[in-house]
Figure (tube, rainbow, N blue to C red):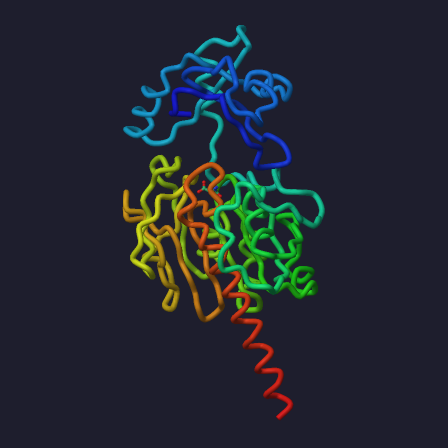
Length: 328
Ligand SMILES: NC(=O)CC[C@H](N)C(=O)O
């Protein structure tokens, strides 16, 4: 973490902490958040997750910015020499590795929790209809589900390997493809699932889900030098012209130039011009590369959830009209 002071606030965004290790500058010895249940050190130790502090994370950040993402090794084993640790780091890679299967849920389950009412910041423009959404868990952040629930959705979360045929049998009004770790090109099974669903049901992709949609539509993804991480990246919404301050956490991106005819780039990251969102109106597809659910981060992009509701509503109304016309 580049923020020097870590440990004074915390919120869980998944059923468990999947981190292998955490490197921080200064570990807060006190917690100053009324909801904080324990110190970061205790939290990590209870889960046998390695942590190291008093590290000059700014030097590491400058190195990563200069040389790109690097593989690192943390070890408490004093028997290992530096050379052996370096060998370990050289023997591992993130490219081509399926990291989704290790974090996805094991079985379908419903989700009902909404955003805590006292923190609700966008309760305007809520339609009355409840739309049925199937959310693919590629490592889904809980606040994505809370925002959908706050917008009135009835949600079933399914594992990353859940068959598209089973999803279509559930007759959802929409499908959400979630965020998730690792290389999108390392999970062809997930791309195939997306391919079988799009065009039949409105789809919304977030981060990994956005990349899987890009691949399913025939585009390509690539590994960025050091990705986008943090809560202060400016993104231009090309439809509205607005610039949003966004929450970002990704190392891959969709190559805009690889997208086929009809697929629109809807958002651009203003730091490097990369694709930050796409749409394929012909198949009722929308997706964004960053995190509209924030948690943590700014709420500028919360409207994306409302746009997904409007997309499902439009499709549902159209299908009712078509059904009525078929009787005439
Ligand atoms: N937050 C995410 O879903 C990340 C997507 C993908 N694993 C990447 O690193 O680009």
